[in-house]
Length: 203
Image 1 (tube, rainbow, N blue to C red):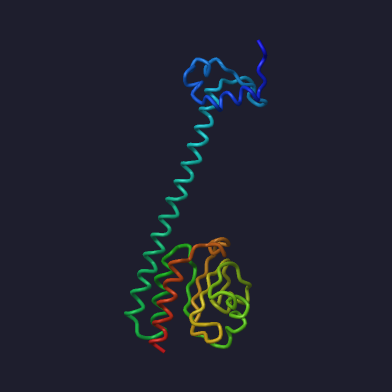
Image 2 (image 1 turned 45 degrees about the vertical axis):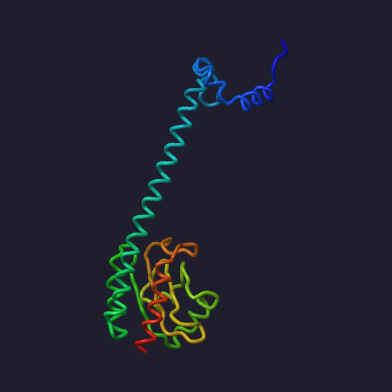
């Protein structure tokens, strides 16, 4: 009988995927040599692979659950902020109330709604010319300008246009990686659009 080479065995098993199912005794008898663990049965290898796959799935589910919980929390925060837009009738009161709401998030160390003045021109030119928002790290001078204190990562939103700004909304975090350029900020952008309309009415 002609001896089969490994390519022929692989080809046969691929064409007959139910072969080992039809011959379950082979799974127990078959031993595979591994460099680190010596001889082990195919059943044990499959069991280990299943455990690893289950662990991966479990971690993915936990991550998705954490993201869902965080998204729900952020949604509730901005829902409260939306309500503040129509219950406050001056800029300073609105700014104070927004800060109180946003800073209930333990990952946010500061929140500022700032009326535009020329002191912010350099910041706008540096961070907000190509986009109406910036998420990431800023230097100490910019941090002091916005918050009067240093912060590790920041989200900055321009209210109005770069050529005709109305205000700046800024969030600060003591976590280096809390605000990142790739972060989803859909809820914040939706709020910023409503905030701009409200500030135009209050002007």
